Length: 355
Image 1: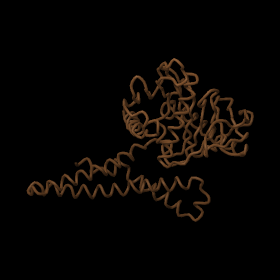
Image 2 (image 1 turned 90 degrees about the vertical axis):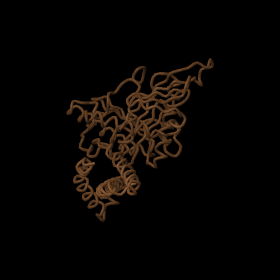
Image 3 (image 1 turned 180 degrees about the vertical axis):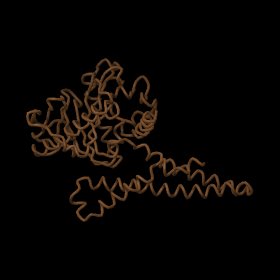
Image 4 (image 1 turned 120 degrees about the horizontal axis):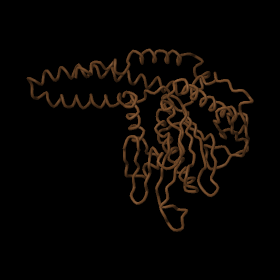
């Protein structure tokens, strides 16, 4: 129990208190809501920090009360039941703090763009990309996270070749980073008249929308801008005009696209913002000389590269290769219930950072 007396140090109480003070000062400014495009996320961050500070204060008080009860229970057996209740309540509050402490990455609190690209597997891979698109939008809807479809490209026969989802919510990157990598599907193909089992792959990339990326200077002769007609289904979240924009950064080979807006100019501005974030990431990766710390190894979506496998036949199971977490209800996962994979990944990531 003595170790728990160091809760303020473990959860960086002083730093959080200063951060909350700075955020509240920003929020109290009369022009806050009109001058901050991220005002909603800033208030969410302040609320999250305030919750942690409040819990830390309550835990310290509970710990003092618990110590007193334990002393009393040595003489009064009747106090033992109350001690058990207090311990359970203490553990519940500690679990909430534990979850908060998982979001300790440099970019965890930022908005993000999630990219889906069909990999090996032909039309089945395109269909698999479409299934993943549905899974992620269901997850975002369930979490009440704001998002827009930046770009979507349909497959020739079915499904999607690619899609980009911009998630404008607090901790979008922290929640979605776990999804970066190759996702593998094993099932009886609905496109095979012989009903054979097929394996399909799709690659997921997640990019944090880094603040101050405007500092990146991109020259006109370093990019190629292509305009094309939007394609694919996206319901209310996607624009279907001929104003879609794709930008290729020639020096790095980075490609970004946007079709969310009706204006070609607006789509170009948004695509450039994403490009700047990607270049900022790349520059920081090169400076740190540790690519895995931020984006992970970029690999081809194919055999032996998967971070998670979804098996429909001959049995049903979703298994994460990094955390070894397994879920038998594959339909629930494909309906957007991926929270267990996110939480266990964050624990796995923290362990890796501490090793």
